[in-house]
Image (cartoon, rainbow, N blue to C red):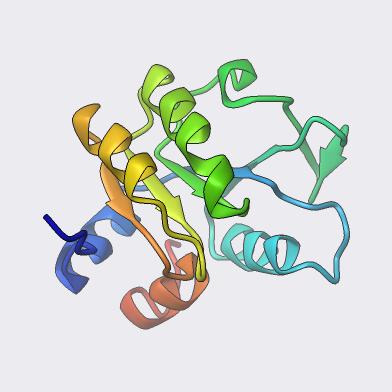
Length: 142
């Protein structure tokens, strides 16, 4: 069965119900897309949790080495890693009981999607969370 992203209405619901976004591969380099997207989402009222083993803090938030180290519930695991790295991230997202696995624009992996779906998670692939949020919730969460 071919993968299909959730409908626009379903993506809108996911975003409306989201408070915490753990960003795997969030760079502390302000020129990187992961940094720009996460900064924009933070400005719209989402709690951003950096997941980067090579950083202490990013965007003013404590960074964690892995999803398992994050001490709060995670609504969305937003992934900025190459597609071949996403299945283990999906497994870890399932273990921490995240609600949604979101693979950023240009990233898709059927194995990761299957792992997440089997764990009962929503799956969005090859979509930019900032673009979707801007279209569906133009004024942000606040």
